Amino acid sequence: MSQISQMGQTARNVTDIPDVTLILSGRYLIASSRSRDVQEQENISVAVASDRIVEIGPNLADKYPQAKCISHAHGLIMPGLINTHTHAAMACFRGLADDLPLMEWLQEHIFPREAQLTAEIVYQSTLLSLCEMIKSGTTSFNDMYLFAKDVARAAHASGMRAWLGEVVYDFPSPNYGELENGLRYTEELFDLYAGHELITVTVNPHSVYTCSPALLERLAAQAEERDTLYHIHLAENQDEVNTCMERYNCSPVQHLENLGLLNKRVVAAHGVMLTEEEAFLLARQKVKIAHCPESNMKLASGVAPVPAMLKQGITVGLGTDGCASNNDVDMFGEMNSAAKMHKVMQMDPTVMHAAETLHVATQGGATLLGAEKEIGMLAVGKKADLIMLDMDQPHLTPVYNPISHLVYAAGGGDVIHSVINGQVVMQDRQIITLDEKAIIAKMKEIGERVRNMK
Ligand SMILES: [Zn+2]
Image (cartoon, rainbow, N blue to C red; front, top):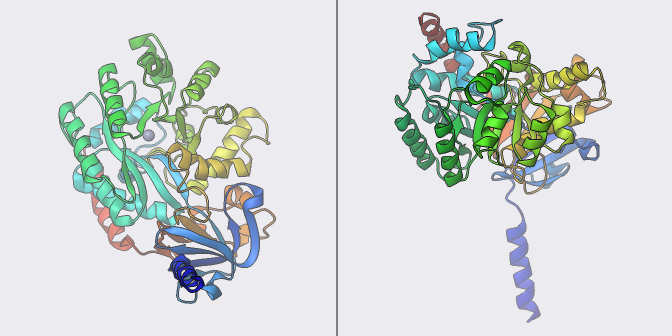
């Protein structure tokens, strides 16, 4: 009897030993933005088995000698950053038209060129943006764009975790043509990526000023049926509010509320033009906000009341927006801008402190995407989405408070290694999953084509 139970115990123990495949080892570990989750210790390590974190502690490379070990004596290990609103393929428009008002920029420069985009341009431009995202510490992104099947194809190739969907509006699309085809295209996208490990398909109405009430409602029904996010630009600037007032005699937020469309599925990009009552309404309806401070500053859209939203318990994530209005997808830069924008806006240096800003860029983003159980912090059982920074650099020395450095001193170029879903996607700043040189060469050709588009 005892022998049998002993054998059983042994067998169970054998299967309990995780098959550790990867160890990341450094000097600092930031498991989350809470100060008690920050550790400084020699050889502080994270052990990964398959796609998950199975152990965190010192000297795990000694404990699991069979595992691949990536270490840096001055490395800082942290959760990968989560970009909650972008249009990755807009990398092909970077620097093409700057210093213009949003509507003029969109209608005279972006929309006419977008009308000439092809699947190939979107695929290549998304690959370029993915290279930039990986090299600056992003491990998840939430994308809204045309030719979403090609965005998904690029995301799949890169190993990046992605939420993405086809942007839909009333006018014909260069991708799917008439609107009815757009709804069908999105259905096909859902079917293509059903059960994909890293890609989640979402429903993407462009905005209240480009989508009729009927279209907004149809897309909401689609999001409900597919149990996914409803990702929309909302209350971005004064022009949007004015257009909405003229057409519907109410603000963009009130318009969605009148249609019965504000709910927990809604990821609202921007949320700049909000009254206090509207912020309360968004909190009550559990709408999430993707805050894009650099795009809002560059287009002079305004300042989203993020500190107030956070106080009200609204889930806020950080986003870069497309890199034609940013002009990069570096989430370290975005954290820096977010922290400073709200301080100067409120003339109060205590708001959006470093830990709160890091929280928004990690766990806030994970919660916004409904993935807070899986990503956004480092803990045993979570998905292995993590990055390492090299802290042995002039601008990061000395280290009193690592979180301060991440928000106020570090940049995307300090990220040396990146792991997504347990897969090493970058080591020593070399992207493993994509051919960066070939992608840059191809983009130079595409740039010439975009320049010549009339
Ligand atoms: Zn946007």
